Structure formats: C-alpha cells, structure tokens
Image 1 (tube, rainbow, N blue to C red):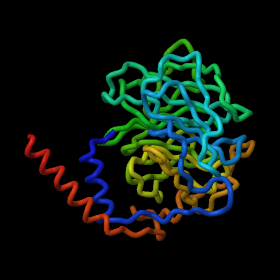
Image 2: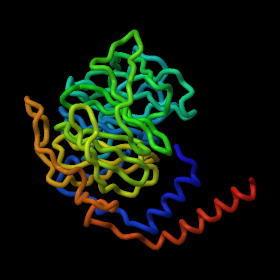
Image 3: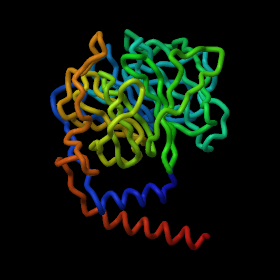
Image 4: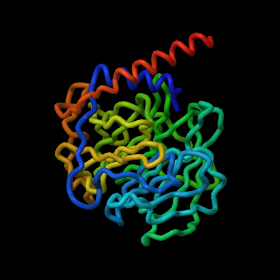
Length: 331
C-alpha cells in the first residue's frame, strides 16, 4: 500500500489534470452501485460476481481478519452468507478473490507488505456454496512461488474458460503478469512464471468470455486483449475516483464492471462496459469481444463520458503541500 503522501499527491494530480468518469447506476435490483453495510468488512480487498446467485458479490478483508469470505447482496448491501474456511493455515495478507469455470472460488493470500520477503504465498480454493447461509467449508490450500523470486501482489484472476490462474505483481515502477501451472497441485510448490509486463496493479478481472483482462490501480485502469494466455493491445478504462481503490470484477453478464474500495461502508461502483452484455463463454470459448469500459478510447481520460472535479481540489492541494513540508522538516 502506498504511503498517504504518495496516494494524496496522485489524487491531486488526477483532480487537477483530469476528471473522474461518469458512472452508471442503472436498472432495478441487482448489480447496481451499492454500499457494503457489514461493519465487519472494513478492508474489502477483492470482488467476485457469483454465477449462481444473481446480484451477489464475494469479498473479504485485507489482513488480520481470519479465514472468512463474505457474500454481499448488491440489492441491499447486506451480507447474506459468511463462509469460514477450514483446512488452511492462518491467512496472512488476503488480497484477491476470483471465480473459476470449475465453480470454485479462489482466494489469493498473495500480499507481501514487506515487498517480497516471504518465500511463498498461498491460494485457497473451495466450491461456491449453492445455498447462501453461514457455513464452514473445507478449502484446499496451494503453495505458490515465483520463478523469478518473491514479490508483492494484490491481483489474482482465474481465466473463465481455461481455468488457469494468473497473478499480477504490484510494484510502483511496474509489475509482471504471472501464469500459474495448467493445474494447481496441493502438497507441492506451484511455480508462477512471468509472461507479461503490467503497471502498478491493485486488482484485475477477466471478462466473462475471457477475451479481455482489466487491471486497475489506485487512480486508473487498463483493459488488455487476452489471447492464448498473453496480453495484447491495451486501452484506458473509465474508473471511478475512490478513496482506497482495491478491487474490480465484471458483472456475471459482462454488461458492466464493479469497482470496490476499502473502508467502513465502502461503495462498490458500477461502470458500464461499452457494447457489454451476454458475454458469458460459449462451449467453444467464443464470445463477442468488446472494449472494456464505457467510452474507453485512445486517450487517457477513457473516452467522452466524464465527471467534473469539485471545489474540494483546493483543500486537497493544501493538505498535500502541508504533508510534504512536514516530511521535509522531519528529514
């Protein structure tokens, strides 16, 4: 996680040089912008849209919470199930969650706030519950290492057609996209190998047809064409401005992306996908490949749909300048 100074400075730059995209809050019922009401969820760090419970999103806290995963109903923002994982060690820094084509939820205990000091991290896997109720489930634990050495990561994505697991490492100077083995195995190391270069990443998600991969950071996101396990052409994706931008997932039908943030009563914001909808994978892996993000175009602003900066910009600038001056005095 960036220091307050770095994040605040980046926020000022965004407010001064660009504006937040317009976001959609359309339709009745599920998959609208919503607020997580559960007082236990204060560091929502990952999101995954359920495929068998319409409008339900799986999430978890960042660290020091225990082996818990929560199902939140987007219609109400209320938790409708708390899942306790057993058969795993004590979670250390859980950063991501993704749903595989096998119907399993994959939980990424992949964070390393000491920037690569742990020689391995973990992935936990358990079937998505068919019934929404508090339950204890047995999860499978997989040890994960990286072919080029330990590193910090916050994004784990399971490809919706191949079932292969990918991790994007987090580094201020740019990270890597890592591909896991064809099948994860318990009881031994699962070595992830670098297959692409990515920017600073806090989470990522595949489109339901697997043809696009969206990677977000604190103040921006990029969508990549994805084919044969490799990144293709990329473009800017519209993102909402959030306090601690930590998560992203597609809606189950691919019509929108849902962007989440940490904090008490954090908001999950719906952003329409241009040409999205009906993008679930077909039996032959096909699907209408469309541009991720509403109005995402060639420019960094993500297209023609924009919000407007508010008068709070001046206040933020003053605070950041004070922080910079204080740090210099301490130095």
